[in-house]
Image 1 (spheres, rainbow, N blue to C red):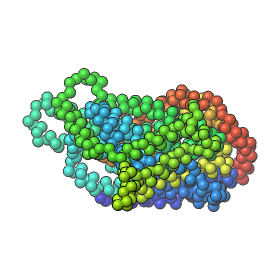
Image 2: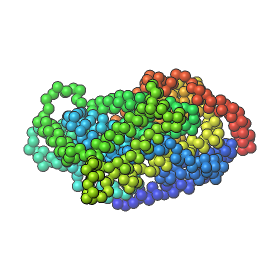
Image 3: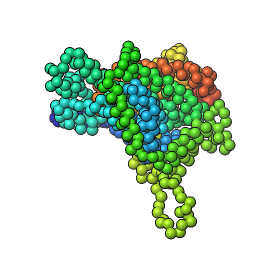
Length: 605
């Protein structure tokens, strides 16, 4: 097995080298078959897309390629490329990441999670609901990966109290020790086969099997099957809830902010999307999807038994639920009384959310109306709150200290130190956002977006509601194999031009595309939360595929319903807006010239 791991590692290195060196050469025909500037921009975009999909380079490193390639290829000067990496949208996201670091620093997220679980009860279906509600709420403010990584240990502790340790056979343990390290180094996880999975549960009762009557044996098998299903349901619900919850706020996941940044690039006059308007649209959608997902997972994995819901519980289950209740209470008591720092973080977190929501909620004037129009953005609001975290004391200040000259002059620790922020904030995501904005700017300045729009004539006859469903399906399938952030960076320029061609509000297509790329439920490699849950070893690929297929379908249908109902009034989707009309007029005036250059270039080949 060690040799197999080494072989996989070597094959991965060879594939990376082939992609790194072969991709630039394989894409050279793009430079020859298109007009000069558009062809060069498309070459860079396809190269970045290939590197993102294959992860031949780290995602953040690939995002830096426009800084090098755009100036060298004459697409954009450096002084226009580099500012895209620090737009106000990046600072809004940075403020959310810093707030998340402060919450994690003082364990406020754990206190919230355990408190919710104490309220919902310890029956499996209720616990799954509690896990999903808590994970989705945390994922609205923390990253999806951090929310999943925080909730899985809590879920494992509860599962062990309910069912005991989930043992594995010695042979399987030896295999895992030999193969898991080299495979996980390359983001590959071992997939337990059906025989290995069943072997882990058969060995325990082998010695007693002869002495047990057939009735008791049948009950034990049912209980073992019930245990395995509940275990899977718990583990699979957490990454799904994280992905769903991240769509509810602009700062919840990177694709939402990429939409905001690209809207400002393509349609500078568009001001209908902000934290408040997005929350009013996405939060109800998140709640509905979360409840339907909970019903599906609970029914599929035995948390809710439609046939025997009136049946009396066995003593084993009653005892297990009592143990789980005690474990949750014990973990909560270990946190101790609420500290001053936790109270302060909760207050600033509450202010963070309220001020972002109320800045410009659209249906009423927001507090930003008291200042000069256009000067206050969501980034200003977020950064204002998080700056306070770096000097506000973590211990309750005493007025007596000011008048006691003999008191020691000790420095008070703030709620968040810069060293902690440096260690916990995922700075690579900031670079990834910047790469997406730089790519969008290159498409706009080079005329590539106009060229793409000229190739979308066959889609002009598609009814807009059908286009929404098709777009969501295509992007949801594409993001099963590629990074969510990379997916939306690639598709948003195309969706913007398609909306112009269809004469519909660009948000009508761009919002479903953005949210759809978060609906990646079918494969372990689809998202980092899926990979984290799968690496526990208790889930198989077929479990995620079976559960995720219906989750994807539900997400597509619910998103289509939302776009054609309450989203229309929030984003004024029923009309073709003036800010999009200006862009359409500019594109129409440029299109004939682009087409003539294209034809002349093709005639030369």
